[in-house]
Length: 534
Image (tube, rainbow, N blue to C red):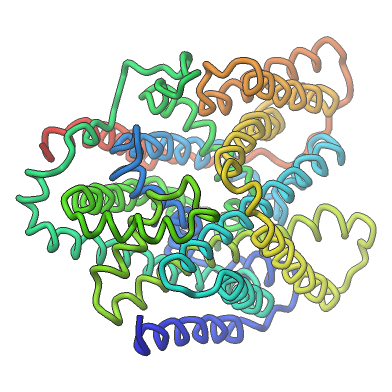
């Protein structure tokens, strides 16, 4: 790194302070947390994808595809459930939630059932999201320190303080437009790494001649995920499609970090375009960074000096990077192979991966804390007071996430997998709560609460005592168990039900048809990649 690289990083950070100042005028809750419901589908789509295209996508996923044991293009199966989930949300879930005029998506649970459902799920979201965000910032700061020499605590503070300032000032508009910039930088970084990697290999033909054919299988119909005690039954077609459908339907439809963007839309046509874009554009982006992973992995296997530099960096930081040697592939490639200036841009891309996730988490955590808890005890807030509380909470949650980042070292080695599993314990039952509320009339609060608790406990039982079941299945199993138990309890113990909000459906035959057709297309493309690349 030289003066040019550091200049690029400084200009980038100063630019984000400017974004916060540009959108500092927020007059009420709708402005601060929903951007005045004035956002178009394109920035919302890019913002949604930027939150997804995180550090995992830029660093860990390419390492999984290119070099990690048991890895390869099977990573693509993570995307199979996305278009199916978008079709379901477009028709059945999001129209009703949008027309309810809510800020916290968990408010719906109180309107339809009672306060306990809302507060429980909101609390779980706040704890899990802040811990996960802190771990992500920790990991990125650690990798920046190992590869560039930038001190760990300086990296954390740079990422955290700049993000908190522009989120504090500009609210949701600053977060969304910041995500747009970060998304473009991230994708540019992926393309740059892919291009330089192919150049170092001597072109596409040399890459195709050297690539490990064992990593080219993306779709495996023989794996069902019910014999996974030794992790050899993961990434099968059926668990990734069925479990993925429930996971993504819950994540995009009931998780505040994502639904807050949907609720920020101008209207249902904007939401339609947003869900369509997310259903159609995620796979090409994922395919691009997976190919990048194959290219860099192939280069690593054929370049002894590349291997030696990764080993040197890993040995110098083994106490903090234990178990993450493969994750050094992308950042070491940036430092070793790219020219100055480009190095600065790519390091900015790594910082963007962390900042986009952090800003989204901070804003959504602030929204649910204020809407679900503080307003319950202090409901007479003026617009000026509301915005003041919102900004205070954005600082509070930013500090909480940074706290977890600084102290994640002792637990981080296992926490990423644990967080994925914890999320899958809750995603299915939470989705079931919304489905029961919106699509059934007889389900009451007692039935819903018992159903949700039963679904969660059953998933925990699978985690602790039935390791053969791949955790992706928990999303589907937890949802189905919750629906069955909740509905039976509601029939056996009749009680008065609350109407909740008016049910709205969005009839989108054309859009649903496109999404279903795209699902078939990406499956066929994934199956055919082995023949194309071998």
